[in-house]
Amino acid sequence: MIAASATPRVPVVDLAGAVVGTFPVHRIYCVGRNYAEHAREMGAAAPASKAERGVPTFFMKPADAIAVDGKVPYPAATSQLHHEVELVVALGRDANGVVAPEDAEALVFGYGVGLDLTRRDLQAAAKAKGLPWDTAKGFDQSAPLSALLPVDEAGDLSSARIVLEVNGEPRQQSSLDHMLWNVADILYELSLLYALRAGDLVFMGTPAGVGPLLPGDAFHARIDGLPELQGSITAPLR
Image (tube, rainbow, N blue to C red):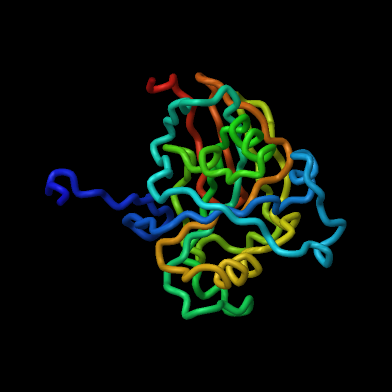
């Protein structure tokens, strides 16, 4: 039995714009290899066109992996912490079974900007042995996240610019229309595998240019029209 003082808290994300409050997080889904150039830089085959894309790659992070205060301790068990800037989609209602792409937008509450932090050395070791990536992706505070902006305030993001700067220098730059699978595509594909629920977050994949973060580094992530994400990597906790 869990003591009352130890009751697990529900992770929440602040809201931006006209809506006041917080967004409780249910699950965090992540899309791998959603930009062809990033797939290639990671040594993976990438489709020449959307018609050849096949099916997306998914993995998950714990709901409490979000970091919303901008301070991210350098994680344990790695010497290769890497950044991956991403559009984040927040679902505001439950799906009723499989979601047709034309119905996907009705599930979306809002959008934010996130980082899918990765222990790249652990991921490389897992890949070499054909093992899962969990320890590389699902660690504490591995999902820094901006405030969420409701969909009706965000406007059209289909070709918005996505940028990450580290210590004031550009690291990743692209636009959302370079994603192989858009939001509607991904929600459809996810709904074939999982029961999508209000509170789910979907990290939509990263463009090329991923690279290392070190203690003391400052990051600044932005997507046109959305709240920005700023923070820094602090010293390891242990």
